[in-house]
Length: 348
Ligand code: TXA
Ligand code: MG
Image 1 (spheres, rainbow, N blue to C red):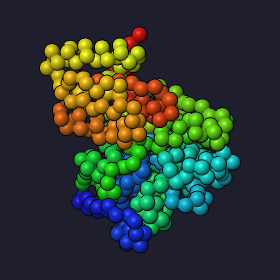
Image 2: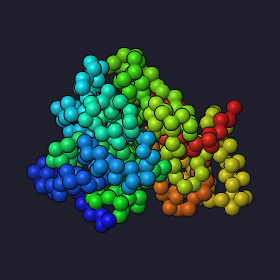
Image 3: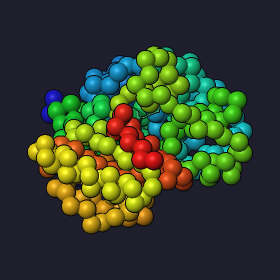
Image 4: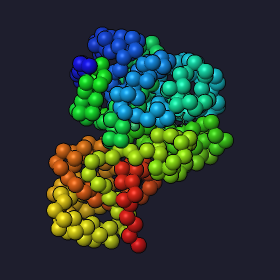
């Protein structure tokens, strides 16, 4: 398949934006695949009400079919196509955080294809704030089902270049809207449970959500769990991972630093190329060091491109300092630990 690439840098004029997006909307309407930017990461989209189109997403990404998709809408009226009723807490969350990086899981309407929801009786819905995404959904006149636009298991794409690396030749169109603002996937909250449950932490934090709907809990996922109907099926797969082996080192800052210095020496002896992701100390000596300091917004925004960069530079081992799991730090650590799999070292 030949993939068209549409570069859209200036999104200020809505008329010209719409006219440039017409052909992409047509592809969606006729059952094709369009990659588009959102404020979190790029998504690979298809008509969310067309089961056949949705199946193409799973093939293009190599995604397991038991992993449900998020359906993206542009206006609240689109909700009536997807759900039977909107609980009060959902209304409050939508009012406060939409459009934006929050995905809400509600009981689905029967018209939502089971390929979208992987057979679950719930559907994940998000209204992105990115202008290109919203205009595309409006022009396509249908909700757009879209997972992150990476090959399954790879880090989510935060630039068109990442998408092209993973999906060129596998989709009809890639819309290049530059680097995404947030860089980590949306917060996912399940409102079908008695107590609302955060299934995936993100930019919108537990504390922010608690403030508007009261009690909310954080779901603890067991990685690589064999249970096929996990609560959020996607979370059981190894995720967000670079080719390099990533180690997260947790504990007292100073001890972590000493451990990293020790590990660099060890791995260098084995002729490995070593990279470091650091939040506390900038003066490590390794083949590649990415220092974020306390700028967690920047860390989130460039985390996935950093992981891809380390691969490009043929780094074999990535050693990463940990940060406190609170506020946005929770989401950053969630992705890092997921990328590390079992390689989380706790120094006591
Ligand atoms: O920021 C984002 O959310 C991006 C952009 C493109 O919107 N999308 C994204 O999609 O990250 P994806 O498919 O990579 O992640 C969706 C997550 C998966 O972990 C999936 O298992 C979960 O949401 N999910 C979707 N529908 C669900 C449902 N009905 N119940 C539980 N979890 C669900
Ligand atoms: Mg994904």
